Image (tube, rainbow, N blue to C red; front, side, top):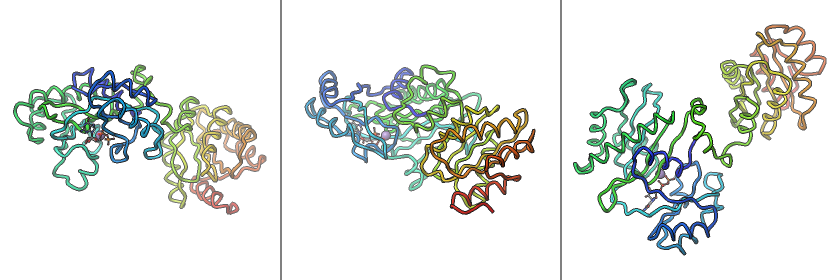
Length: 381
Ligand code: GDP
Ligand code: MN
């Protein structure tokens, strides 16, 4: 789960990181009032969970409250990478002498939490890493000891910070590391971390991405979820207790078990198709959950066929088959359905499915091939 800039800044501030705090506004009039309270020049910033807002025109300076109102009117309602801006942050404008990048990330490549730093901040770090990899430091941390003082010095030297900034830099990096660890984050970044004209370090932009699996420990962070910016289908799935991730293909997948779901998606690709989603329906697979899963899958207009792959262990295949037939009858939109049920009571399941005119398959290869053919509008082989 991604947190908006202003939420991320609140968290960093609570760990002692100097940030340009401000106020959020959802109307131009509120933006004007906020700028008035702040006093002096402000920056008006679109609060959307995508990068590159600056380039897209979602970050603008305003000299006074009237200008803040005008800039907010321009930014509110604009779309940045398909997301409509509904909130802006009004923050004191900083005078920038230099922009750095500073981040802490769960780095799967080094199997460690790593500090990422660059003296070429302000732009997207992925871009710098591609065009000028030597300008990016990637420093894995000790898994038990975490951020140590020599790590801090190493990063400060890499960035070429002047000696008078090193003390402040140390407390910022320690604060960032604390914020990362205590919120169970995958990423906590400051981009840009600036040296102001007055010679102080200041976090002008912040982004925290939380590990969804750790969220149950943080009800306060869970409450910061921005439903406006999530796939409606992913919200519906979470409410139904289904693990679901939307993808771009045409073959909807309904599977019990995460590993089996991954294998099913692999075989769909091997058969020449593209999965429309990852979906793990979990144990039990009762009719109401199956119906919810079908509705979520079919909400995606790109879906042309559904592949159901169920391994009956404790779950009995015939119960699942009955659930599928029942759920299917309630659906608004019908697409070809290929169902493979193996394990407990597979034979009874096959009878139920065939009586209901569903396409069945004994092996997963066969099921994937049939689903791909069905999605292309071909008759089952
Ligand atoms: P992003 O493009 O979504 O990462 O948004 P940022 O908040 O990082 O802003 C993009 C750029 O706008 C920064 O790299 C700065 O160059 C500029 N910017 C942001 N805030 C200020 C500010 O207070 N003063 C000045 N002069 N520039 C700013
Ligand atoms: Mn930024």
